Length: 167
Image (cartoon, one colour):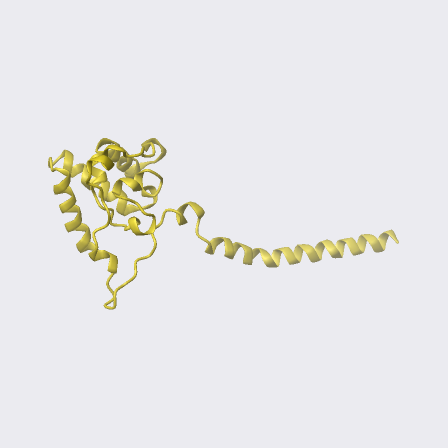
């Protein structure tokens, strides 16, 4: 009798193990196909192409702030120490010239997908950490202000000219 119970237990354990192993690849595939929660929350919605196949958002200048009241009430950005490389440099640049960055549109078009008000909004959370457009645009703005001594309006014109033709 003991032998029969042991044999049945062994068969049951083997059956469960086989069933679990046969479902594991499907579960792994499901996990792989789902986006990471942090990234999914920081990526903009895809733009809709126009009838000619062009990105409809490319011809539109994204949101930016220019009124004095909104520039005075900018929220804090994430600390640059949380990041590395170009991303860290971009977060530092935004802290150095926040009022200029707030006056710039962000060409990843996060104003549509996330309701961002300007390029500055991207650095208030980790959105910019996952977006090369935000990082590159902030670093360009910093160089234009510090090296070429351009004013925010001039920087905005340069950004619009460069990024509206790239898309």
